[in-house]
Length: 258
Image (cartoon, rainbow, N blue to C red; front, side, top):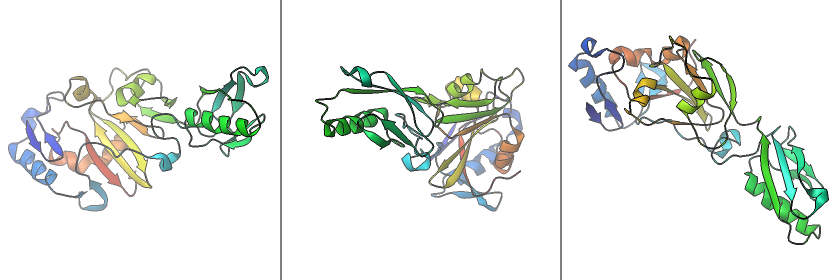
């Protein structure tokens, strides 16, 4: 195994490609990985391989609902309970398209981008202003429509799936009822947008299952594509240099090739 700053190079024990990759190719890829900044893929200034093996983590501003713990968003359904006040107990409330809810005595409350605990605090503050003594507010997520991940390609049930709490790549694929019998497990691409910049990362599910690297965390608004040649095409130049790379490879994208 070759370990270089920001990238580990190893012969692919899972794809059976060891005999097809020469030492020179591995060395070339390793030297490229040592560069301090991103390098362009195939000479294309709009596709750059980034140092490191992890996608950037999104922040609140990316989708207002893209982190753990959960952030409330438009069309989510909440259950709100004010202890000891029957009229305010176990009330079902849906967030409107602008990210607001209406609650008795509290009025219109902007909850978009808040955690359930923060919604509890805001409601309690407003109820105190309305002369409710020491309100104990509980907010629970009933149904989420704002925080979803897309899983496409060679899975048994492609679609949109809710993200509540911590979710990994393997967990997202499990939500889609796993991969098909002939799915390309070395061909899984995760797309993510962070602060307006689009990224893609190529993963090998067999490598994850065998402990070659950790199961990466995925977030709301990510797109997971399993065995999709259109997505893998982004990595074709890098794979032409060394198809034996089994560590995650991350690229920044200014345009999506088709």
